[in-house]
Length: 171
Image 1: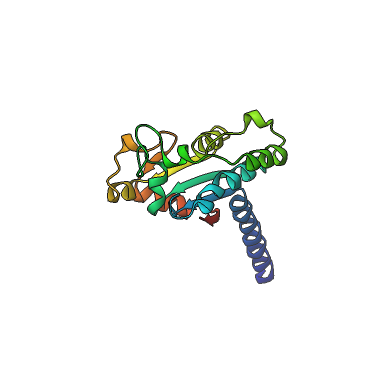
Image 2: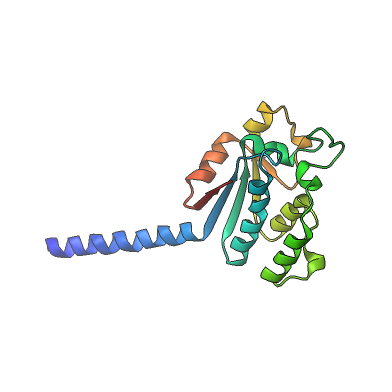
């Protein structure tokens, strides 16, 4: 009887462990912490990774945090006025657009021309895009100033996002 219970316990543990692993395998959290003006290569890699993950069937969440919140803030930067964000001002190089077109079998005219459009493109494909509301407060950024394609979230929701079983990438 004890052997049966041990076998049953192991079977249940393996079954549920596999299920948890499979759930984590299907979710990707991309934590963007670096502002575009600090290291554009890191921030600009995010939509590429998100698109590839979405194409492979993953549920993608992008979280803008720390200095990266300034990258999605309207009017942020020395030469940025009005309704554009630094991501809107950052053009996708033509060679990158052509590469994305080839890699994702998408006509070149459907590939976004700047990184702000690219975030919207990724969101339209199913990604959730959040921004840390507390970091917005620390940078004195109001909800009206943030890119409307993003959703400001509380620290509690941010922690809940981290605690879900996910593959985790930091930029």
